[in-house]
Image (tube, rainbow, N blue to C red; front, side, top):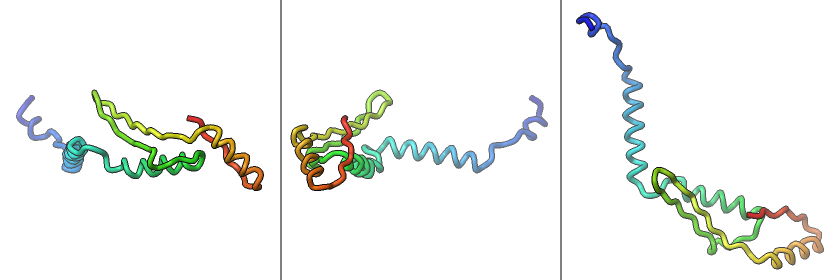
Length: 106
């Protein structure tokens, strides 16, 4: 490498350097916090979708996010009502003339 090559080499643009630094800061900030910011919103959206297809008791729902060995696992535990209760509710809805929606089996 000659002396002229040293002065001619292109430097990284300040925008790319700033972007790299910002990514490092965001990654450090996310790892410092315990739970992600989106978890409460994700919980609400998941429960809304499940409630479309199944009657659920919100007190019987637990959501947790576990981190281990570089992997995140979202665990959602829902206690579903008994099957005979669902069948009876569907029969009542049919007799009342209401439209029923298919149930989602998990």
